[in-house]
Image 1: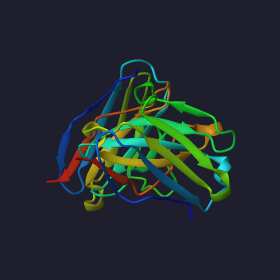
Image 2: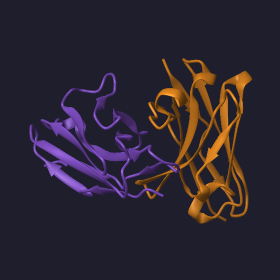
Image 3: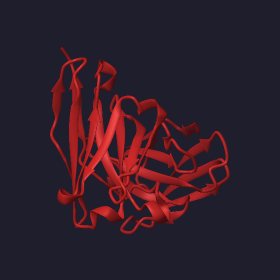
Image 4: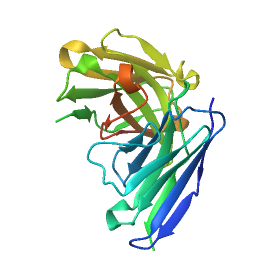
Length: 107
Length: 121
């Protein structure tokens, strides 16, 4: 199975700060990478797919980049509603596998 | 709008089975595959498998192959997952989610609200 190593596990950011979350795949996943946001008690919401394509309705302060085995999610200008957990998901090979998650809080 | 409405919470005994449902609305049910995902300990996510409502075809994570059975009822636009021989390790929240098999099969763009399963004697 492809292992997705996500970092950091937790992160505090001030309002307006730019934050980055990383996912490292155990092998090349050819940009078959999605990012999700999950708020407490809610289901995950799709933010980014194909490594860098913004899902409809997602604010433009979210962006994704990367290739090969290294991918990142950037939030340009932290907002209060961005607090939550973030996960990456690889879709290159079955079984689909998720990163372990990053908890993002307001400082 | 697109909705996936899951069945409610379940409290089951060790060794029992549980069958949960995921009713789709707001789109053509057979145009999208349905995934099932397990979330344990309030954090980590595991992909269980998917079913293609059009063909009935399935793809399981090997880890869950002897544990989960995925089915659909096209007439009611409902997907089901049965989890058998439950243990405390199966206590979790289970989500259904849809994706477009042909364009981006791994991109789950709509999720159910989740169904909590607690296994306890």
